[in-house]
Image 1 (tube, rainbow, N blue to C red):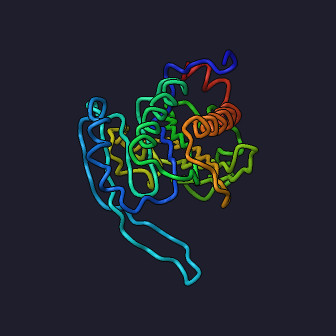
Image 2 (cartoon, helix red, strand yellow):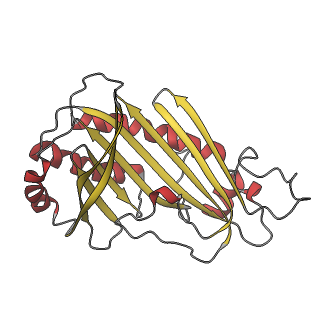
Image 3 (cartoon, helix red, strand yellow):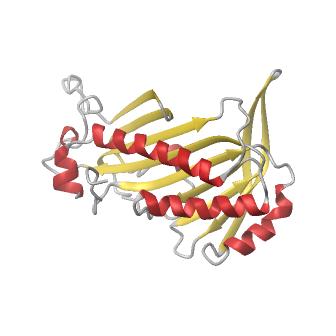
Length: 259
């Protein structure tokens, strides 16, 4: 860990971990017991509907499934549950060890109460917001492959640029996405509307959203839902995501702006 010092002024806005398991069709009967166990740390409940997309031999099937959230008192962390997944999300990220500990608590509660059969997918997502001050350039913060080339300046003032890279790593698939331009987004649009409070910079300005979306899939294998095995896989996703962040950001950004 000595090569990865804690960034006290880190650009991180949101971290979430998704644990997708074999569907428990009657999960609603466990929700009261889950809430009772989680309530000391997540006292505020909420419920709603989520659209489920299923690819079947006859085509794509869309359906709505019930969805429950348990939200912390400061509204910075939450646990979200439906019939096929548990998500832990937070805008108050410590080091990975603290984040993993919170995931462990949620997973153990799920395993104790619901007893899901198989783990099918694990996702880990980090969303960063890089704000550009006057006199600075986005190339001061990120690798040149993510920054605009400048060749279009003769045409006009660049308003927005998106990049997406997909990398197949030993730990699983990794998407690196960026949204650069003059806008007021703090995260990519698909993760807005979450049940937690995310510190935002609402006044439009020059900025880049830098998003790491890493996942492991069972690829059809039957892998039992075991908390420690799941946490080991989550840690491997974290190591790859951490390396990716360190490789696409600059020494200036990490040592002069964020440390």
